[in-house]
Image (cartoon, rainbow over all chains, first blue to last red; front, side, top):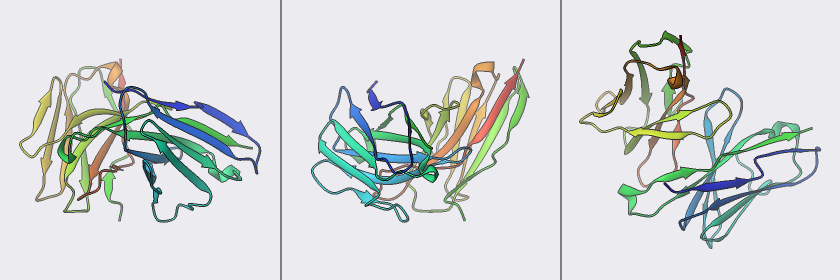
Length: 118
Length: 110
C-alpha cells in the first residue's frame, strides 16, 4: 500500500522554540494532506487541511499563525509549530489523500511525531 | 455533543471471546464510515470500511444503521493481537477529512 513518512518521529524542545514537522508521500502524489493532533487518552482532532499550491484551511480554534502549514509540492507538507509551549506537547499525525475520485479516496497516515515541549 | 461517540472501555475479554463495539454519530449527512485500529503510541490503521449492507472481513463484522446513526464492530474469536484501541470514524458531505471517535480500548487476556 501507499507509504507516508513523517520526520522527525519524536522531538523534545525548549519552550519558545519553533519545530518543523515534515510529511511526505513516498510513492504517490497527494494534492491534499491533513494534519491531526492527539492528546493522551483523547481522539485525533483535525487541525488543518493542506492543499498543494494554496493556503491551508484551519479548523476552528486552531491558530494559523502558530501552526504554519506549507504544501509546496505534491509529495511534501510541513507543519511548523512556532514558539512552542508545553501545552503544545502532543502527537502530531499527518495523512495524505490519494485521488481516485471522491468515492475512492483513501487516506494514508504517517507514523506520527511526538512533540514534547519542556 | 461529540460528533462521534464511543464507549471508552476498556473491554477486558478472554482469548476466543466475541466482543462488540458500538458507535453513534451526530451528523445525519455523514457519508463514509470506517473502523480504524490504533496501537499504543502509533498511528491509526484502517481496519475496514462500513456499509449499510454490512460487511465481513474474517473475524470482523461491521454494520451501519443510518436511521439510528449507529455503527457497530463485532470481533469473533478474539486474539491477543487484537488488543488495541478501536476508533469509529466518519466523513461528512463534501469533506474528506476524517472525524474520529475517542476510541474503545480492547484488552484480550490469555
